[in-house]
Picture 1 (spheres, rainbow, N blue to C red):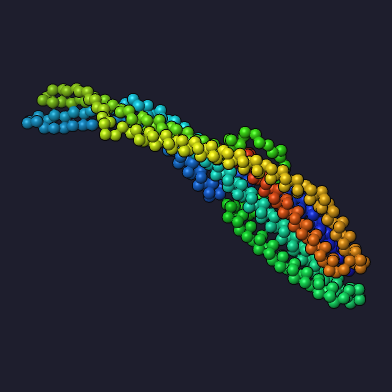
Picture 2: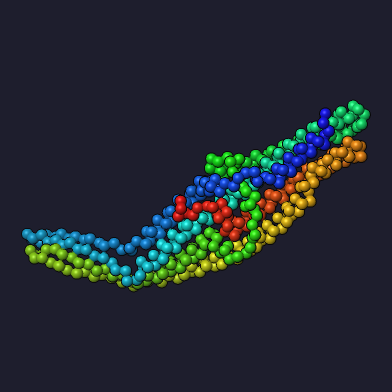
Length: 409
């Protein structure tokens, strides 16, 4: 039978490789991420909603008044009198210009709303994928540790028969196995939970078909003003512009638009041509309250934009600090622990086999090693989640995943 430290060394070398090269062996597939994000029903719903906004914007860009065709027929004695007229309301109040401004803002808003929805879903998807990958590695590690403890039980049994260890050493090893069984079950439950959350975000794509490159998490973060072009900020700005254009529209209602027309027909067997002119008398309602209400709404939207910018900038700074700190912690773990996993494992087991380390201390040391491996997995996951958060807040997540804008759908 091979020494336990040789078999366990191979196990922990494999675990270390999984931890250090978790996404490296998989190719970066931006096109697959594009499809996964843009084919999800929630993103497609946002696309349809954006298309509806564009259609509404195009409708606002159409002329405000259509010509009116009228006809009149009357009988006077033995004579039939008739007339046909055509009238048109003239936009003296520049209402069409106000509606055109609303149209432009609504079209741009539709694109920003879609980009925001796609970006939010991409972040949610990446977060779920990283959590799933974290749970998968923890479950794999727990399984490997369980196998290791079972092998240790066999070795303890053999050494007890040889008189090297007592019955209490065997009992301690069995207790370690029961604890490890519970830990493996807990890791499996966590894996199933994260798998369900991830599957809900995947439109018919298996999680194993997706991959991330480690290069995605390596970037020099900064606090440039590019974050102000984030779809969420852009959408808030365009909502404000839409409200400002609505002020002009409501103001145009305070000016009466005249209607002119021409009428031709026959009366008393004579041809008749006439001109008509009408204009509303805005005596009972001059729409001034509507203008004031629109102004208040625009001011409220402006305040929301200012508040959102402040909140976004603060969140961006926080995510930047978080990314830098967690990255430093993760790199420190790599330098101090990752490269020494197999070596320390060998030293611990050799000491136990030589009798320099009791079984109780040996099992405690092995549990500490397992906790160290779990800590490394947790640090790497936190580091990646922090990177995704900063990419989202800075507005660079769409560029990283090469998500297509609405105009290219």
